[in-house]
Length: 448
Ligand code: SF4
Image 1 (cartoon, helix red, strand yellow):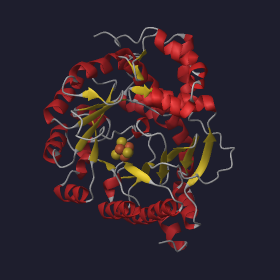
Image 2 (tube, rainbow, N blue to C red):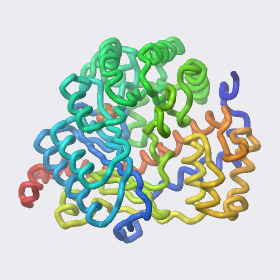
Image 3 (tube, protein in one colour):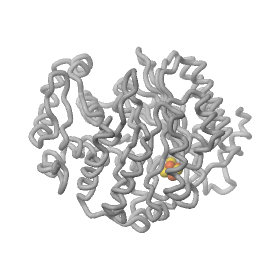
Image 4 (cartoon, helix red, strand yellow):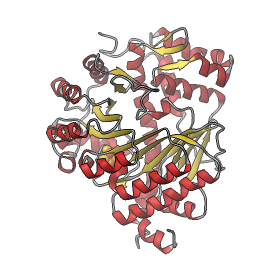
């Protein structure tokens, strides 16, 4: 198999470079638009719940996360439940729920109470929750099973102790051998146990990647997601210092190795996610729920929504989040209206990240105009062999998976750059003289 090795032929051609940049632009908010409340979609959609607390802050991480303190988290979860009730009162309906972070399981009691509220509001079909290896304890797993979690996604990143130390995850989360043993003990408790892994560290050798893949296969977890290492402006320098910089284009080589060594036990569910045989009804939920859901609403500080052709972001400031929720508003402070062309590009990118773009979906959403408006993108991707036209859908080829792996990495780097901008609020909060800290401020305001 040599579809990716050395890069995808034509992938650096100017017209493809323009497309890649254009896809990433979709995520840029300019902050100039007044933010109106989201109108409830006519069909049930995805609910994303963001819990930004972590016990230890990994230096490579670009997500919205803050250091865990119990009191602070209790107040935050109370706000989160108020925001969830707000959407319930406004007539939104949700079928699938994804709780991400941060580390959503840092305060299990609060998490379970929040899940109970969600279930009381809506008949939920699937519930995914993210966690870290140190939370794979029997008591916590019992509580998550009791709450009806369908999919538990564990942030492992690597089983290689040298890499875990470089990522500063060895101390808080234990050695690779210990994590593997914890995963083996958790297996079978949930319909889907997913393991999140990262590849393309500068120090990662072929042997190390091969060992990681062998451990995943031996564990026989239902799902594994392999992400290329990504940075943001804020983390790039630190990452280069602590983790080094991989040779340009090496991610293609490693990605191809992953495809080779996971098959046939695992088949791709998206360009980054690989699953064992699907359960009896419907596809398994995956980390990249944006590929499976047309629209989604994010609650909590630092969550994104996509509804009615608009992208929204909630505030990354915990103080601002508290103020908005206490005033009976949602946490949303940023909005971007996508043009028709941008919406088409967004669907093209996201659906094909999930491997296929059905013709029925295109026709129902855009009619025939999709074909001429997207003609340059379709022609470019066809020319480099990234897509093929099947009877029912446009599908990614093996070469297309390599393209999308790289393109999505650029897309999420653009998202990370936006997160960087929003995080400036948090730095201001943390260092503000007098400490206008979320916990104290919330008590002062008399919020629950
Ligand atoms: S990688 Fe996970 S545990 Fe580490 S800071 Fe990011 S969200 Fe928290």
